[in-house]
Length: 169
Image (cartoon, rainbow, N blue to C red; front, side, top):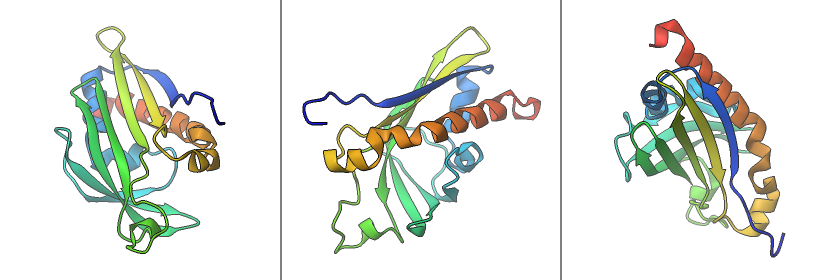
């Protein structure tokens, strides 16, 4: 990998709903479990609808190797109806949150969603996983983010279902 340029992992899907309606779901941590394609989210611990950069919302998580834990998500991108993103930090129950942890609690990776209107009632939604600031050895462990592509596709599929259901409009 040395000398190679890293590109964030992106997955896009056209969703038949206005960007404003899609954004409402993405900005509500209470809805994230509904759209999670990884199967790791268990629910929201704290956080209300996101309204700006600097906010933090906490999610309950589960990963086989770690069991139950929490992630503190720091909102780092926020442009209503266009873009939202956060950087996770290991929280309660995660081994990297312990004072004696060998790795940092905040690894430098970022999850974000970009919405590009495609007519009055549709948008192209792009989910982005950026681990460019993660140390190279750790990026190799996650295939530079490639391990998340399948989950990201499922997330956008689930988001599409949430946004195009008549009861959600």
